[in-house]
Amino acid sequence: MSHAKSHPHHVAIIMDGNGRWAQMRGRPRLFGHTAGARRVKDIVRACPDLGVKYLTIFAFSTENWKRTQTEVAGLMRLFKRYIRREAKALFEENVRVRFIGDRVRLEPSLVELMDGLELMTAGNTGTNLTIALNYGGRDEVTRAARRLAHDVAMGKLDPRAITDDTFPRYLDTYVLPDPDLVIRTSGEARISNFLLWQSAYAEYEFIDTLWPDFTEAEFAKVIGRFGQRERRFGAVTA
Image (cartoon, rainbow, N blue to C red; front, side):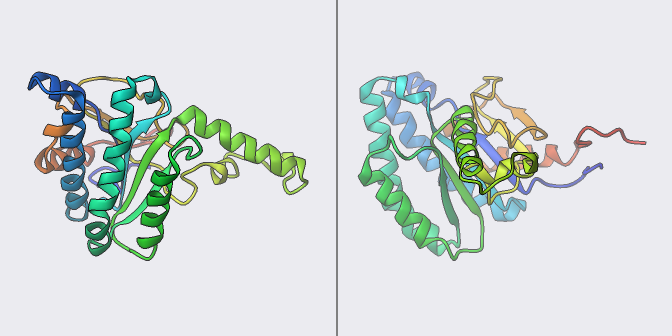
């Protein structure tokens, strides 16, 4: 099952390094997050030419609530501002936007903007942009297990019918293909609770560049390297 010389249809990115990027410039961390949000625009625009149909970005994790109140509040304002400012452009560029994660803890005003953007772009057929907001892989699997247990208890699902094809239907990403490639910027080599179930057979690239410096050219290089890899999905090539 070799997929050599191919390009990834679904790329997931752990956008890391905004804070460090700002600190290196003697600026507050939120300055880095704002620069990081601008970088998202460039990478989304680069996807069609690179053959990337699905892009999933890790914007805010379930663990990020542990950051200072100032940073968390600033990030929430940034998300609202991003949606308000970019909605029209995303719609006109035929991007379909989805959000994954647990919305219960988010401010109602933010959730309203998220719902509105999803609805507005629902008919778009270009790049599928998925934004993971208040997302954690373990949290997602826990919530999925809860929904599945509920369906079993209600008699809608026979426990004997549960397979590894059944379970993903309960995940936040049930309409998306699994990622082919996961990129993490800023030199950290860990997956930080991101798409745990979905990335079982993904290829990983850990790159040193801080997220605000991650250009379309570097993105294209990473995509090119993916084409040199041989993906066996547990099988052995003859």
